[in-house]
Amino acid sequence: MLRHDDFNDRMIEVLSTKKLNEAQKEPLLKANINCIDKDFIKIVPIDFESTASIDNVIFTSQNAVKSILNHQIEIKNCFCVGDKTEALLIENGFTVVEKAYQAKTLARHIIKKHSDKKFILFCGDKRREELPKVLAENNIALDEIQVYKTKLTPKQMSRSYNGVLFFSPSAVESFSQRNLFEDTIVFCIGKTTEAEAKKHTNNIITANKTTIENVIVQVIKHFE
Image (cartoon, rainbow, N blue to C red; front, side, top):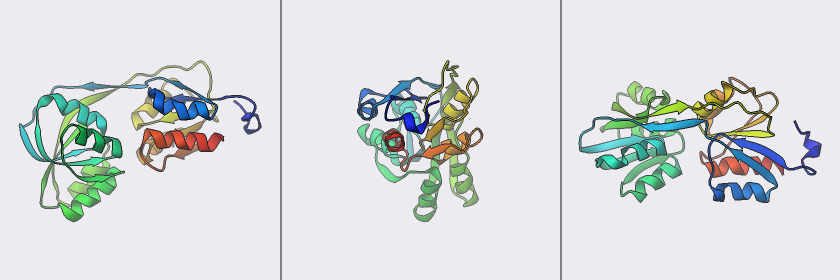
């Protein structure tokens, strides 16, 4: 493991537990940070049943949106978490009524302004409890439909890195099955990912916004 004094003399190397595109890697390279990227989870769409038309749907990830796109479901109002999820919905012709950066915040918006509505949550098999729990506590009608599964694809890394980037709690779980955290700095995309990482280390930096790009900003800031 490199000491902080060595950072200016040798290239920093970080591991991303999700494949990044070239545009996402470019700022790291410009900052003299080499990024090795490997997918530690795999998203597998599954068969599901749904009505052809739904008034109000909640999406907490891009994965859920991608999993329903080929099913020709008419959705009147979408409620989502994150800029990228919103952008994907709009790109595919859906109307986004509410967006938040955390599931709990979205739940509060729904309670405050849409408590008379019924909702469908399209989700994965490892969906978090926060949003359904808060809505249930406030008597908001919610049905859940699983549209994908998250498969862990753990890999044993033969070396250590100056930092490891995580974009979901499942990726933390997958990484931890075959690797130790030791003194590595962990960069997390959001609070739920941070909570999973805290089971293994306190050496965590969490993004200000739940985007891949902001995680990368935090990496560059830390090692500059």
